[in-house]
Amino acid sequence: MPIKSKAQRRKFAELLLKGKISAEAFERWNREAGDAELPERVPPKRSLKRKKAPARRKPASGSRKGSKPAKRKSR
Image (cartoon, rainbow, N blue to C red):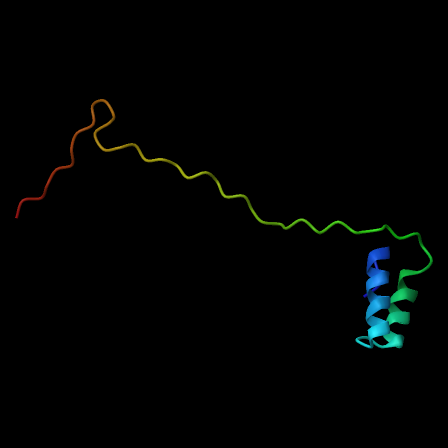
């Protein structure tokens, strides 16, 4: 997992000082990032949620012209 931003590099350095990660892990991640100029922060990924289609409204019964009420079954 290479470091992707300056803020991430600072956070991992802080974790290293607190002893929550090993020096080897920090160096490996830092090395994978290379000496490229990193952005201050990386924007969060956008989720790939599908937008729901708006619900269709059913017309009220008997509201259309010429519509007839439903027939009842006789027993």
